Image (cartoon, rainbow, N blue to C red; front, side):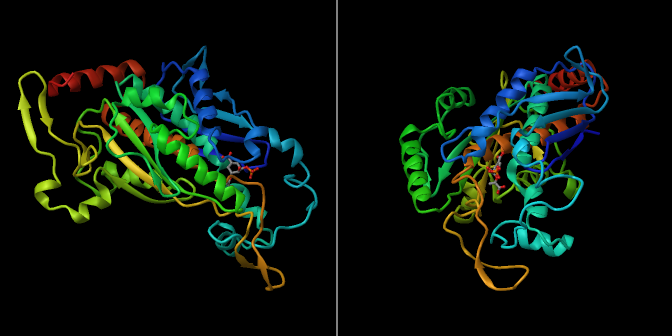
Length: 385
Ligand code: EPS
């Protein structure tokens, strides 16, 4: 069973992920993991923290001479900022520094305080912070290396920030997309839209405001048959949707034509089926976004997620002091103005994790060789290798 947990507070000593269920013999390129960690850190509109951190992964278990052993793989990312927080975040001793008592609307602060019976918002915000997503990106980078062995690749890009969208007429293959993103600060393939997005972020920053947006994840090289129609919790779109919704600040997910289906008749909603002796079954469109009945249909998965604007506003919203119950302005702390490009990398990681889980479920194997053989056998049976 492929699964993982992460641990760590935003300003604690480190973030840790424990992955279990990886087959033995998978070669892991640590440089590739660090590349994704660096991608998550970049982006116009990120805050001061990203100047302090230089996220790098350290492997603490489960790997020997560059290959997995089939035992739990533990990944750790140090928080450089810990040096400045040792007293305030000490696991032992007496509380140091002032408690944060003004919860931010839109953050986990107030609901978390009430639920966990805490008197300092920091006890909640430290774990609710999107800093945790660095650990997920490291896990996702490992999942992507497993998927590569099955011929599957995962990409992401930003399609909207603060209401500024990319030109929908621009269509790229996944490889063209990856090339375009190389020199983009916002992980956006449309350079004209990107310039407008950057301007919108600059204006928001000037006003002490923040911006959200939409990113798209594309999965290529899929075989039909991942996920299943037979139970609600085996449907791949449910699992992908849930994984994307689990990312901090994500408020909605759509596959393929998504919410656009509301305005389309059935005759323009589905992907007609054709057959070619060379190609096998193929479709003339991909409105389903690669999943039908909870099962991959062999087309690319296309899934978009919307991120709300970050709740830490330098021009804060109204709140209530949790000690005095007086009206106050919400807590302000160093934060990002816009982190949609970072969220795209996290979305890519979460999608890779879910697809890797589905691949391992279907093709199993305690060794990577067994898994690859099973994939090849299946692709041969379908005639789509
Ligand atoms: C983040 C680290 C955080 C924030 C941001 C994302 O670092 P710090 O709180 O020290 O500035 O920059 O987190 C949030 C927006 C949030 O609400 O917690 C990161 O590593 O991505």
